[in-house]
Image 1: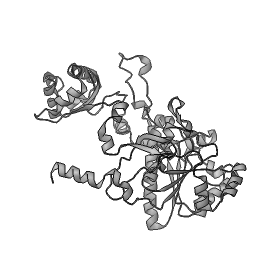
Image 2: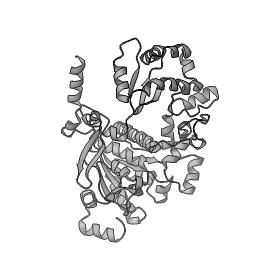
Image 3: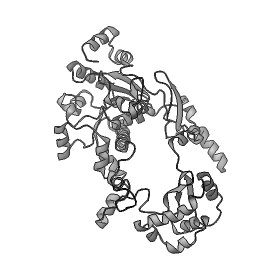
Image 4: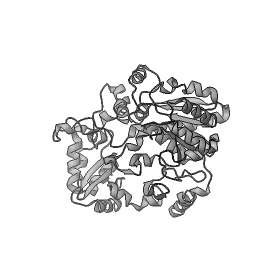
Length: 438
């Protein structure tokens, strides 16, 4: 099978447009998402919902504060941009857990559910009488996933409980060690001093790492339950999840006793493997092994750099990163990003070196490749109108994930869910609303 035949075959069997014709891997699994002010839980249940789980998003009557987290307070109807991205495929209901009747209703839902996700401070659910030990007695098959920056045990967790700390992404980034390794190195004196500091990653990576590990753990627990018939308790710390993604920094310290300091856009283990300025923006270039470094130097007509920095040891010396970058940029800054790509693609000599454009958000949205693969989709939502949203990254031939709807207003599915699962009619639902229960 040739390259074109293979790509055509792969495109055909994983076409996201055909997903609705295929079964869903988690069809029949019901998830209660009690996340509050935390995108760890929201992202975890989003992943489960994409794979077909019935996710019932439970908010307090006034709505989750996460709906308000949006740049410049921009909202579509009642909801900020960040929440809309993580509300996909979920039924939205309201329930006041501070009310005794609300807790009784939650227990009724638990009897009929497979998974519960919560992001409250440690032991908060226990103080309400609806923690894991209580709910497990009601449903022994329940998979209960608790997500919090500090986890559910240890002295720090106890302190967080006393202080009623919520699950905050910025704390996860700081505690994981990730923030310290991100940003401009302190000894780069050509940069203003206030810029040479530990730097928070631009998005909520702590939350999203925690949510991804939570979803993975829940799916593993579901598989175990198939064999054992038993549910279980899952304790996820987003800080620990992010720490798992912190590459070799911890191992380097353990081995050498030295800290890998911030490296900006540079990779401590490889050069070239970073971004370079072009005439109209930035490009990434990789070519760090000896043959590939030689290829890079041939392309830019600077074979003298091979003699000056002949081995990986010289090229990964932090003192050489800026001088090497400036030499390479003497070439790249004379060309546009498109020209650099053509130059790299036309190279036919020994060694392998790659280059590509660093896309701005508007350019990412104009890049047709993402729409072809369903990584970005234009979706006309019943409640929120036409939106551009991320699609699902997993392409699967038999049980592909999918986006069925984008978001729901606060309590939009109260009538449907309360009636279908608990038999509560409109009259009684209205009474619960007047009593502040929903």
